[in-house]
Amino acid sequence: EDWRLEPSCDSPDYKRLASAAAALRESNIPVAFPTETVYGLGADATRSDAVRGIYKAKQRPSDNPLIVHFASLAQLRSLLRPASDSAELHSNTADDGISPIYAPLIERFWPGPLTILLPLPKQSPLAPEVSAGLHTFGARIPRNALALALIQLADRPIAAPSANASTKPSPTAAEHVKDDLDGRIEIIIDGGPCDVGVESTVVDGLSSPPAILRPGGISLEQLRECPGWENCVIGYKDRAEGDGEDHGIGEGPRAPGMKYRHYSPKAPVILHEFGASMPTVEQLGGSLSEEKRSIGIIRAGTWPSGLGYVNLGDDLEDIARGLFSALRELDRKDVDVIFVEGIDESRGDVAAAIMNRLRKAAEVKVSD
Ligand code: TXA
Ligand code: MG
Image (cartoon, rainbow, N blue to C red; front, top):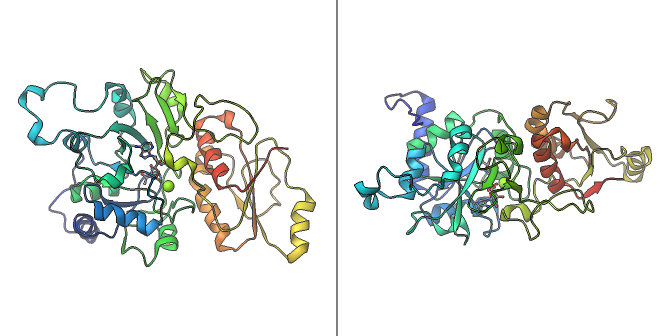
């Protein structure tokens, strides 16, 4: 459980990480770092000034809470139960502030792309800006080795949203972070392209039945295999407009971030839901003839290969990994409109996570 970096190491990489860790402890300018899902924009979660630096750099609305990243369970536990109140009496009980409902998830998915909601501890050491007024906070232990090393060296819980400018697609490579935040931050740790490409799955085990608040790197099928999670419900809503289906939750989104326009490149995105017909020649040609508009197309399986710029192929993991990058690539090509071929959600939860992000990015959803 406790991952350790050799402290005697004096390679350039280690020095770079150590100075990023020092910046996290001392500066109020956030540090961008890779995780297995997307790049994060990190700050010391215990210092308000540092956390405000994140909202400022991203221009993110301040009612949208941040996920707190830890390097180990021991580090999370010490935040939940500061040394002062860990009387011997308690030291061997299960009551470490982490509800037992999470035990099978932690065992199976951490470190990894899963975020769990926990109640804020009494006299919370976390800066109030982290939870944006809620009584809970999101916690996650990422599995990217650079992320773990950085958090461990900083020796602080690290609040980090995705390292994009607010409303832009999440960054899955260091260049994406630079494109959005150059001049606003000083350190970007480059760990190459991200493995997973969509953000962590956010779950709420504090409600009954437990709920999945954001689909992501861990699937609903995987969650439902865990004891206590067999009947977990879907607490987000983003189906194609007008499908009228109730996904278990009537009121607004329970993960506040899910209500914002998101993941959007400059050009409007027209999402063709799975099964809807392709853009017609008139749509494509029509927009071309008007003002010589250039068109970006992201296809994912069935649209003919003659079409457009980015082909993500048919493999779900490849699509997840390449999606945000494809939106950004089309932005760089300065296209005027982006048509996207939707995929079939019955293929599972990775497909659902992909469609969730695409629907937020889309200005128009075509379902015939
Ligand atoms: O994969 C990820 O989770 C990435 C990497 C950097 O770890 N982080 C990320 O953070 O996606 P962000 O801030 O872009 O998304 C956090 C999501 C938002 O939808 C937010 O509303 C939700 O988690 N969230 C955070 N704290 C919450 C809380 N206490 N209650 C409900 N939802 C919460
Ligand atoms: Mg984000």
